[in-house]
Amino acid sequence: ASKKIAVLVGSLRKESFTRRVAHSLIELAPAGLALSIVELRDLPLYNEDDEPDPPPAAYAAFRDAIRGADGILFCTPEYNRSVPGCLKNAIDVGSRPYGKAVFADKPTAIASVSPGALGGFGANHHLRQMLPFLNMPTMPAPEAYIGGVASKYDGATLTDESTRAFFQKFMAAFGFWVVQHAG
Ligand code: FNR
Image 1 (cartoon, rainbow, N blue to C red):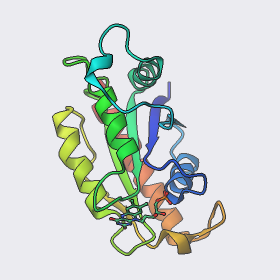
Image 2 (image 1 turned 90 degrees about the horizontal axis):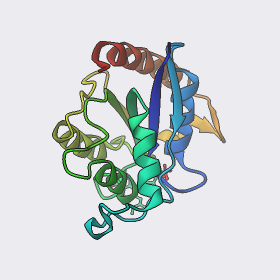
Image 3 (image 1 turned 180 degrees about the vertical axis):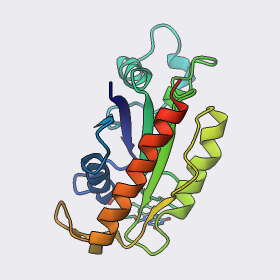
Image 4 (image 1 turned 180 degrees about the horizontal axis):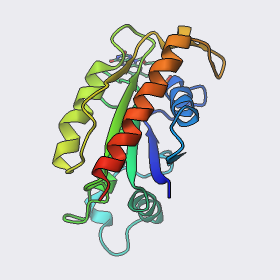
């Protein structure tokens, strides 16, 4: 059976480059992966006062979506050299209640995206600080820092052939990683 992958996109805007990259990665994934984006826009800011009884419906729906996945693909822009708040908030929501983090043991990979030259390095590595704490086996390589992203797309279409080849290689490696580390 194919492995279900939840894709988390750290941008809420309609024309997001990061969302375009997420769609490309989904399109170029190997046959053994079934990927779908789990939307973050309706998640309220995490507030411990809302736990446990009952948590907001949006928290429960998000946690169920992550629980049902065999792996996670993070696609993140960089805000102020870190992860945008919507993605940090989603990680916080999924990490609680204490001892019941839905992310635990899910194999994961990170693609960071920027119109700038550094390819979201800061956001990528701030994720790499968080994920071990959540006990998520995180693919070390290939690393994906997608810089200069605006020149790689014509509208929604990925026009840069070397990027397409890299995305294919990255997703093939992730497919292997998920099989190796699936719980
Ligand atoms: C940015 N941007 C940005 N880019 C970057 O490479 N490093 C950074 O630290 C930041 N910081 C930053 C902060 C805030 C608040 C915003 C709104 C933007 C620019 C960012 O890369 C650009 O807006 C991207 O297009 C955002 O990604 P999406 O929405 O296109 O996926």
